[in-house]
Length: 227
Ligand code: FES
Ligand code: FES
Image (cartoon, rainbow, N blue to C red; front, side):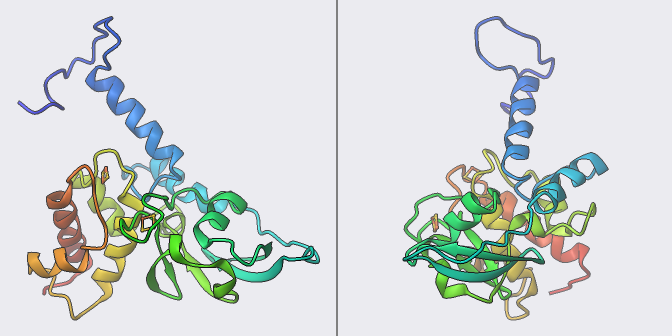
């Protein structure tokens, strides 16, 4: 019996150890706090949560930059922002700290784990290695911008259905990379090795790789792909 099934009653053992139901509850709360991470149940409530992160972000319109700052324009999840930033400000930090888009994660901060993956002009990029000023005028999509209003993307649904995460910390980066994999016709989705190689820049410390692969292949089928 798996760890998940070992205590289905969820009764409180009174020993400080979380029961299965308590674990699930805290896990879901954690995922919500991550800006829904791109993973949400297929119910409207959870879909609303997934979209909320993007909708709740106000368009930022900074005034004249202070000495030493640079003014940049970014379109993030379809919303235009004008921001004054330090020349060495990192894009990941600007998105998380200035715009409150915390779905994109900081893992290694060294370009090695993929937790910070987002799309810039449609291409997957490690935002921990990206200077914000280098992306003046660019269009950025974070995991908060993947759902279509209250409709989750097929890949998000597949991550949920295939249980393609455990702690969820890598999940937003995995989803952003996987979206590019789904779009790339050079990568045969029925070739597990090819998909794994294409996703090799995204590390999952929980080892959910088999489930992530299953989610990508499931989403491919849902989207009508045959290869
Ligand atoms: S946090 Fe950017 S690659 Fe690890
Ligand atoms: S689900 Fe925990 S690091 Fe991937």
